[in-house]
Image 1 (cartoon, rainbow, N blue to C red):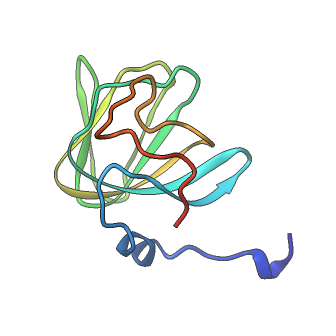
Image 2: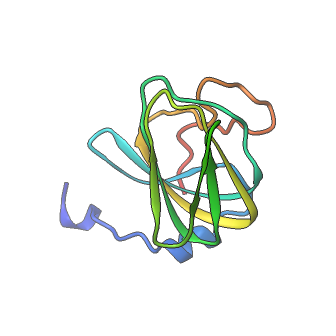
Length: 125
């Protein structure tokens, strides 16, 4: 890789290009992991990932990650890691902007295929 190929990512500018909810967009990749930006609003589907951990970093707005027995509130500058195999869903009463860090080619709905919420994989900004 040459220095010309190395680029910074401006989060605000990248998020401004996203106009739909629950559809992660890839903005970077390293070591077999993808960095994605997504906007949440409403309630996502309960799901889990058999082999992958996920990191959710709040950028703007607030959201929560719900588990069957508790939930964790996440705001700007905060993150939560959901370990593989743990059932969860995300909920945002108002729009929230989130950075995801997870292995490449992870289906956003994990073990569930939901015609409304399952996003196409590999979509870059």
